Length: 305
Image (cartoon, rainbow, N blue to C red):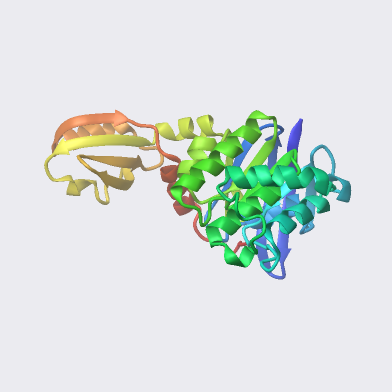
């Protein structure tokens, strides 16, 4: 069963097109990355999934049917814009948040204390949120998101404001949720986390889907377009080369994104005539490279949010 099914959905705000013609399926139990540049339409898509915004056209099914009030207790949502009650005590905020989802305080309180201890906040139960750092507040809100053990977890920029250690802690928890059969959707600009976590990805730019599929298939489809070149000599000839769309200089080598339809063997032949080749291999691109290439190739338009 698909946890999320989006069929030809569009959303506008006045004359501004935020999302147009979006179709997407996210299987239950998967870990899905929703990626794209700022203003691409990711947050609008998330808010339509959660019925915060109603789509202008199309249909969205969540956990097997259109979103209803009853389904909200089965979902955990961490918004990009944090919304904690900063004058409340940490313990009260967590019990209150769980209560909204139908969880009794007798169950939520001990569970919340366990999570606080795990995330290094064991001494914060009686502290007011305004006394905590932004990173600590972020961890409290993450706990509030998952405390009621939701079937579907939607995380919008979950690693924002976290140091590398706490990023790793959250990443491990996300993998545990997936291992327990939960469906996790997260939006992020951290492509290294996408590579480490995701089964599948969807990229939105200018309100349109420009990339969709399993992480393995997406990377495989771009492998033929990337080569790694190590050479002795002047590589200036690669700038503006008709077979090259972009170069990334690294220590002792250069990663090259080929122009659409370019034959890597033709580039090798041309390079060998100009410099001494030490290594030339077709390489697997990183999600960062794919992200940059797709954004640049689909630039323009007026979508956003």
